[in-house]
Amino acid sequence: MPPITIAELLTDLSSLKACDPADALSLVTIDPSLLPASLKPSTNDSSNETLSAAKELIDLHVEISQRKGLEELKGGRGQVEEIVKRVAGKI
Image (cartoon, rainbow, N blue to C red; front, side):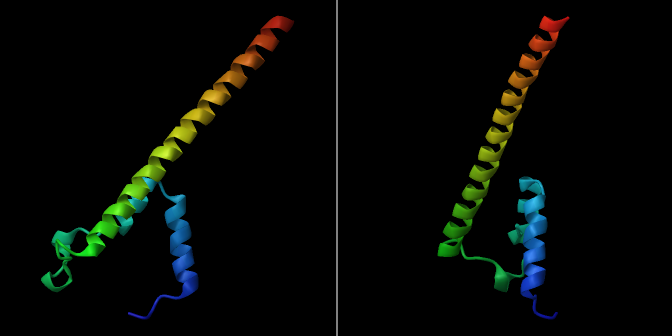
């Protein structure tokens, strides 16, 4: 397999950014049961802590994105109610 180029890597990252966060996480998460024994991470490896921290960061990002979306919807609802009041006042 030829080495990945920087352009290919950036394209892949852009694609992941456009995905739903849960879908992006599933694309980059490796199921340890599918790995050969030589590539399975050891349980006391510091990379597990790093992977765990990365997953927590992704979960936090998803939660903040969802909150932001709800706040935007709430603000949009207020704007719609204001427009409806103005229209009702003119009728």
